[in-house]
Image (cartoon, rainbow, N blue to C red; front, side, top):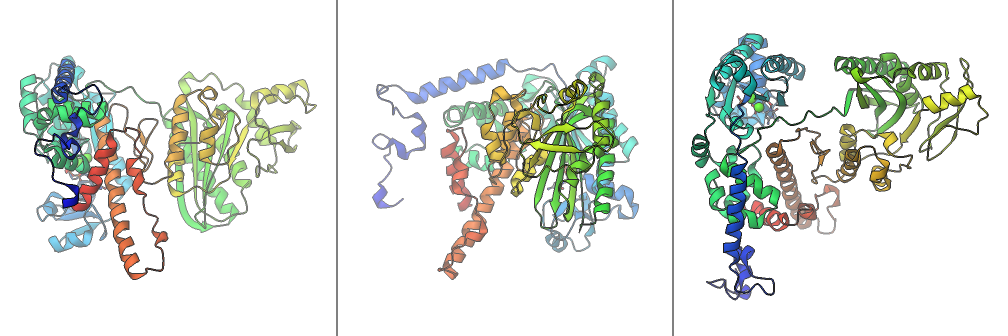
Length: 629
Ligand code: DCP
Ligand code: CA
Ligand code: CA
């Protein structure tokens, strides 16, 4: 510290802001004489008692994680790889390494060429995701037998509530774990590890203890849990990533779960209630015990990348394949949908999405293709490198009583020609239709609201037809930035929730909407998230569980995992910022006259953009620490 800044007062008396204990100052008028530290300790003690009272030891959770998953699958498919040090990935990045390769220090997320240096005989295999998905599905069939509501958090990981199976079959958690692992091996030829504990947080830690091909059981006993977490390093906890670990260690000197409790007063003073609750829960060894509500799928989609082409017959052929895939996926899950979105990426990498919402629910290839073809034709001619179809506003076929009007709309679309021009309109209404085969459709208005058209001179029958079968076209004619596109992908623009509002861009659409116009407030959230996710580095949980940056989904109840994931993006943005900063300084040294605006740095202020004001100083503090690492 410079002389000008002064020396910190030993007792923190005259310059309390120079001490980290600032959290406890009596800054407010009228609070002189109040021992804030004592007050904060009381608050923390009360919080811990409340949390302790919520401890539920009645559930048995099992967490399972496949061993060296991609590498094990590759070895199974090619037994000549058995026993060899293996890396799945490329020279630029290793996705995972076999345990033989790990002995040499080869690790996931390591550049492959470094792996080669560490382990000269390292064998590389390219990842094959279809294979991994296939084996993952096999494991899920086994999980289903033990917990029909199991929670899969990745291809190779799942949480199972085995409370019922233990009770029904008179088995201990240990016996179930042994049996389940044997069943997985039997069905897949692969090994996995398992952890059994009274909650998900600890079960996950336990599954890592005897890896590979092992298990660890923590009894449903308060003392056992307490002892287990007391020396547990915080980094082992799902939800505490590198960033949080560094922050807690460097700022508060916390490295074990028990130390969370010792520093409880600080945690309560410095963090939001939600974060402090999480940290204290970790200290107490508490975690999720209830099965989160089954979330409804919001959309089903498929897309294909191909060599850019403007051959329309080829493009329609690909569209037909996509329609078939989408149909298969919808029918497999017994779902129908109302909003079909066509995603296009042109040869110039411009991404467009076009959506149509039908009055009735559809899921047949024919129906999908009719709408998709209309949407694509309206864009032609163009050269494309990617096409995708997504169905949203899903509905379970079992509850479906709305198929009666579908015939009419099918006839309508089949009978129409392809002159539909959706360009230039925001919300278009089909206002005139002959009802004859091959009769023309004319799109005449740019109305903002929808309803039966009374001004077309249509017959009563035709008017009924409009009432039931009008379609809403919402062309989203804009080029979206990378992050917007990603967000739109995982968050379909749900056209009929917009109340006919004009859509100029995602941000505007988010602004014009208000909750009264929406059936589902979640949709509002998803649009807001879409708007803000255009800024890289600002990570949000869309609908509460979809990462706005990468689309990764973590179901409700996975607070810890979400925190960890957020940490990952925060770390990523810090790293990016650091790189940009260093590039910037090099630039300014070498090219003083030329601004380095091409590097698109992540603005620093984004780190401070959290709505949770209490995080701001800590985040800023950490950003500083990180640079000094
Ligand atoms: N994976 C990846 N990139 C990473 C980490 C993992 O692509 N940075 C992939 C490859 C892994 C799979 O996810 O096989 C599962 O990841 P795990 O972290 O569970 O690692 P493994 O299953 O490979 O090994 P372990 O036995 O440690 O679980
Ligand atoms: Ca694994
Ligand atoms: Ca895993």
